[in-house]
Length: 393
Image (cartoon, rainbow, N blue to C red; front, side, top):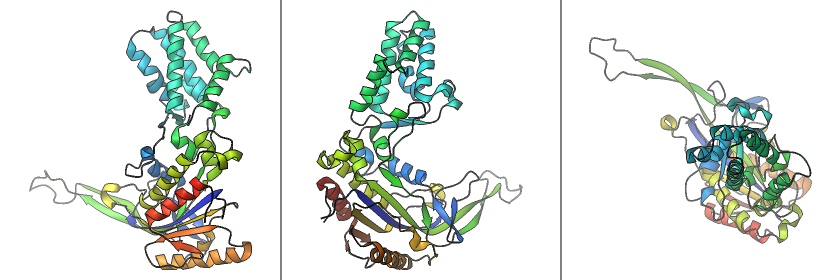
């Protein structure tokens, strides 16, 4: 049996005539690799689509999941607005408390919206902040200066500050303080490094296994209310870039990190912790990776596609991507890509030994090394069971 400290998920997805992920100029994102330029999809784009997917395997449908909000307006809208709507607190008191909370949560530049970066906070954290703000406002309802001082004290870095210790204890003792999304994909809080969460799901940028394929799509718009004697030409002319490609994707699940983030246990104690929630997360994640497509221009390109292949490896060694299978571009065919993967994997096994347990889902027949073929549901269930049992057969 193999101890599954890591799950490595390799995918091949094919998309025709799409614009999956745009850069700041509206063109498809790209990257050079193997002396040619490839089309790519950023990890941020992939993770966002998995996070917000609403279907049977939505992350929000997991029993025990805790919501989280990513915004620069959490203090304004989720903490202070309910107090303002209550109409029971002096406006100067509210303003003083809000200013200190903005700085405490977002840093010294947090008093202006442009100075705040979108921050991920879990529902328990938001509720805690709202309760603290309400308590401060109630205790100093007629003294704006005292209310602001109390709010500042909550976020003070003084080591003997009882409030500060309570705030730290809250984060340490509350299950999923950063919500399920924070536990999976991590977060960085520049104003309070102690609130940082290390990502347990590591996502690489997907890229085409071949040289980029793109064209500029010319389109026109006709005015339906044009009079017969008016210019019969188009009322608007434009263009957008379309790309096509077979993409290699790579995701790593740090199982000890995932269990620790979800349960609050120490990473080294993951094997003896309750792994029920972690196994549910993995089952849903495998389904989402295979079936949820990234994409802009949904109405004009319908960029929906399922994975042609999904290979999962469970093992205890440090993960390694199979991206180098495509350093030399291959033809934009699934078979050519699978052959390249198989060849590269055989070389790695010969050099380092084959110690991972492997399962594969493939639309077409394939014979990847030591990989039993399963349908997607069975593959996701195998991955979940591997995490739940702490061993892979």
